[in-house]
Structure formats: C-alpha cells, structure tokens
Length: 333
Image (tube, rainbow, N blue to C red):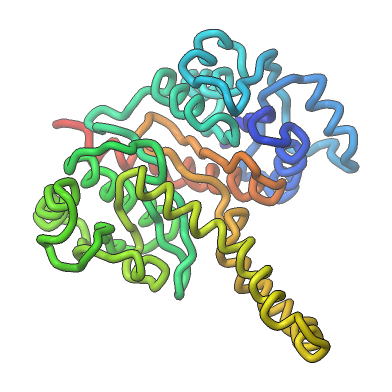
C-alpha cells in the first residue's frame, strides 16, 4: 500500500484546508493509497471532528509538535525545529515509513528538508521544481519554477531531462517535446545561459524542438518548457494572476448595462470553464525532481481541492517510479 505523508500544518490557513483536502483524497483513494497527516495531533483532531463519515477512511495522524512559519528562515527553522511537521514528514519518507511527502508550507524549508533528509539523486546537479501550465490543447510542464534562480547550462539540460521523464510517466506522452525558453527561436539568441544550454539539448536524445518564446508556452509548442527558476517563478505567478484578472475584466467590460449583465448571466458558466484552465487548484502542486523520493510542493494558499489533487499527483509519482527512472538515467555508471 502506498502511503503519503501530508504536512497538515503547512499553508497560510492550515490545518483546516489541509485536513479537509486529505479527507477528500481519502474518500477517492479506492484502496490505492493511505494518507498520514503530520502535525499537531490535537489541532488535526479538532478539525477532523467537523467531518462526518470518516471512520474507516485510510487516513492517519502522526504527531509533530512544531510548525515552521511561512516567513521563517528555512535553514534556521529546520535546525531549531527538528520536530516540525516538514522535518518529521521528510524523515518518515527517508526511513521508508511513507512513500511521498506533500507540503504547502515554507517552500525553502520543504526544499531544505528534502535535500538534507531525502538527499539528492547521485548525478543530479540541482533538484528542480516543475509546474503544470494550461495550453491550447492541454497542459505543459514548466521547470524550474523557483528552486534555482542562478543556473548553469548543464543544470538546465538536467531540468529538461527530468521534466521529460516526469511528463512521460505522469501524462503518458511518448517522447515529450522539450523547448528551451528564450527571447527568440534562433539558436544564437538569448543570454549566455541559454546559449550554452542549447547545444547540450541539441546533442541529446531528448525530443528537443529548439527555443520557444513566451508567446509559444500557452499555445502547446512544447510538452516541457525549460528555464531557470527566476524566469519560471515570474511566469507561473503571472499565469496564476489570470484567474483573478479575467473575471474582473469581463464583468467590467460587459456588465456596465442591463444588456451586458443579461449576457454575462448566460455566459458565466462557459467563462468559468475558461478561467478554470488557469486555476492552480486543477494541477495540484509542484513536484520536486532530483531527490531520492517523491515530494510535492503545494501552494501556500492551497484549498482543499488543491490539496486533494496534490495527494493524487504524489500517488502517481510513486506508482510510476518517477524518482527511480530519473536515478537510472542520471546516476553515473
């Protein structure tokens, strides 16, 4: 049985939305996985009491007496709070008591715990965080989105390789198209980083389609889009902002008169489906690729639906042996 540890104390409003999302995931588990809520046992129990018909669900609690706040220094917090929900969750995973970790807590602390406890896969220069983004025909996988703001060409290549493996196993795409995010399509465009990375991709056995521009990302040009974490984080947060901007803009444009309001009433369901494409809740969390384990970094503002999706995503990572496949590809002979 696959067991997934969930940081119950991680997130802006935790533990309430985390507990609710974990219960929702447990209800749809259908015997595929168990959930271990890690955190303050009393607080978790208090929120679980608000839910009915949970007896018999595959959900358990592992007590952790400390919590790392979102604004704490990751390194300092991990040293001073060894019994934090993040640290305990990572330790459970490292000891093989769970198969994956999901946390919407302090991102730096989650990264630190994964690196120091789970350890980096041999051969991986730097682990990377990736995230799904909506496209005209489905989704693409953007990596890195924040773990590494200063990179070297060899690291970008590994981000693309790990992203390709992830997409192949999670989305079932054979030979995913890999694109290098740049300011132009020509090989000679861009800064030293992307110019140095281009030949590494070109000489590899990846399905490399060359440079892709910002306008190509949402138009299904590539299945995997590679960039450094500085650019990726800006891009992913820009896309997230569309879920708030689009409804407000539409209402402002067509809702200023009776006819407009009447039209908006009949269009809102269809428009809601469009907005849904850009909603982070639909895609769960961001997988941390390159560590010896399965780790999902959820959004700090994760709703119960987002937590449920992140848990299911973690289950898929375990089931498809994503970490093992990355290791087999990158581990030195």
